[in-house]
Amino acid sequence: MRILDHLTIKGFKSIREQNLSLRPLNIFIGGNGSGKSNLIQVFRFLKEIVNQNLANYTAIKGGADTLLHFGRKRTPEMEFFLEFGGEAASNSYRVFLTGTDDDSLIIGREVAYYHEKNIYPRPYNYPVTSGTRESRLQQDDHKCARQILSDLEGYRVYHFHDTSDTALVKTFSEVEDNRYLRPQADNLPAFLFWMQEKQPDHFHLIQETVRQIAPFFHEFRLAPSKLNAAKIRLEWREKGSDTYFNANSLSDGTLRFICLATLLLQPELPSLVLLDEPELGLHPAAIALLADLLLSASTRTQIIAATQSVTLVNQFTPKDIWAVDREDQQSVFRHLEEKDMSAWLDSYALGELWEKNILGARP
Image 1 (cartoon, rainbow, N blue to C red):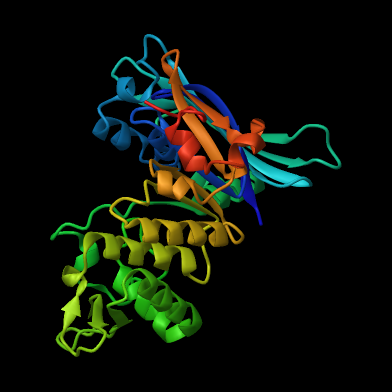
Image 2 (cartoon, helix red, strand yellow):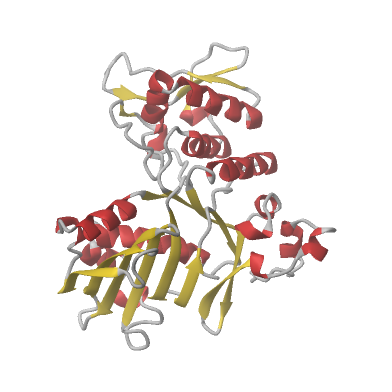
């Protein structure tokens, strides 16, 4: 499995400079404002850079001063470095962003790398662009650029928090919108319908998993609308009843869990899945089951998740956990495997140690 091995962040929001060596499963814990959500935002930001939406995204977020660590006067430039691959070969991407007098950002330098580690002592570096308003990675036909673009397009950030009455997950979606599960599960009924028709084993596993936290749930009823065959809505049946129910009849926590189960039990996962507080609104039993889903999915893909749930943390071991603290006006990330915690873990679960402030990552 190809994963993101190393990540360097410099000058982004609360993150002054951090170097992370990542694993297949990475759970980040920390108090409010510690910076764990900023880590997830790094990936959203990189997506905008690669999609040539840097100028628009910077303006929407309030300008370069809001993105640079304590503003342009203190941090005139930010840098990201990502290395994907394994022991034998890797592809890497480095981008420098510079603040301008009009409070925007430009691409100072953009570089792609390829490294056959068993043959060459240093990676081959290919300069993509410099001094431009937008990335040039998508237009570049060089092999290095193509390979790293594939890596950068392979991850997805998911956020299933919106379960309001106007949430798109509760409305009709296009039946053909089923190539992948969208970041806010806008196309959940279409994606589930595709699995029902083409991947029945995965579909039935999702239904069985939902029943574990919603015993009243019997099955999904998924079919294109008879009034408009191009549209589909999330419909379901309760045990012992033939009454019509749709997504509006589900609790917020149940609907979010259905989204999470669909994401983590689908046949082909994205190469990297990012989740910010996936436990929001879930019952403790559902959170424990979510941990099992994350552990299982991490054998098929790489996962980065930020959480504030003690219950969720209780299900993991130190090698899975990163503690995030705010120190000296910056976010600091520490991998718990670096500590010898065996004596503590004989008597306490990780979440309990977190509550006792043994792990740090507290307000």
